[in-house]
Length: 192
Image (cartoon, rainbow, N blue to C red; front, side, top):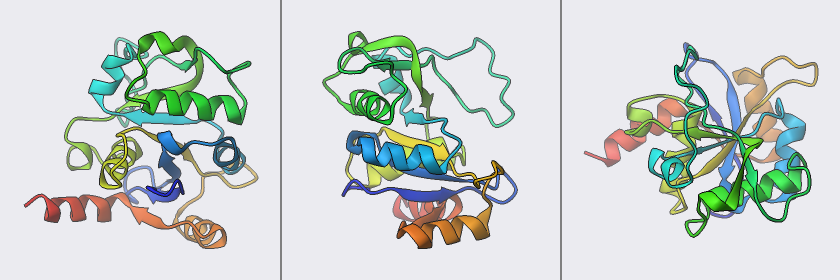
């Protein structure tokens, strides 16, 4: 991830049993975003710390979160400058980079938009075993800004990819595959 490449992150079989393309928002390019959109549902989310979401004035999308997994969506956004409609791969990549730019502030975004920021749980994967938290943890481990990009991998016919297909996808594209379970265990050992 430190080199601008994506990883495939799989969650626990008893949770969503899904895999996401994950990369660092600061390294988002039109090409990488286009690859992501082509192989996923196309719903591109940008996980970040709560502190970063607050600094960018990205409040929760709803007052009462009814999502069964507790995914903490904020209001959607686009970069204020340099985008056309906001939906193209280039526009979404620019928005992701703005969200990761520590010098950017709330005034650098428009709301609503085409990118879905997510607020990671404080405590990371030790507290919540979600792709949101895994993306932020992986960015931190790579020495990057704690802002990632995630999107759920799907088959061409629209069904979610599960582990055997996720492994084949990762192998076919030369992308490392990591499980949230393994990430959580490694972090637990490292933080002793």
